[in-house]
Image 1 (cartoon, rainbow, N blue to C red):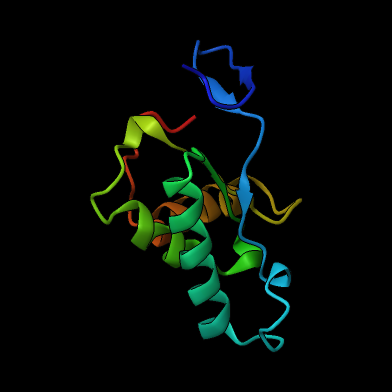
Image 2: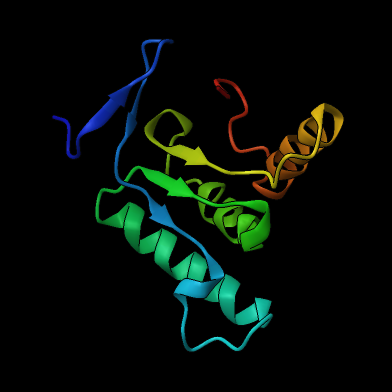
Length: 118
């Protein structure tokens, strides 16, 4: 049973329309550039989101939260096929930099089930 509305992708997969964002500005009790605080909040929020049945997590290079989300995703409590992760690279940065950004994001996310990256 589908819990949230989804977008249909050309691949046949579905991506939930609702994601839990991990933007550092969401955590108002963290000082600017206090990435320890931000990452603690991001991890707590992601764990709770997934526990509540959420299946879509969002991050970006500018958020600096990928390692926390990667720790949650790689904890063994969730299967790769049960979650969508979206991330963003700053642009326009060119083709080579975009490929490097995507690679960096996968590394920071702990290579969480790279099979099926779309």
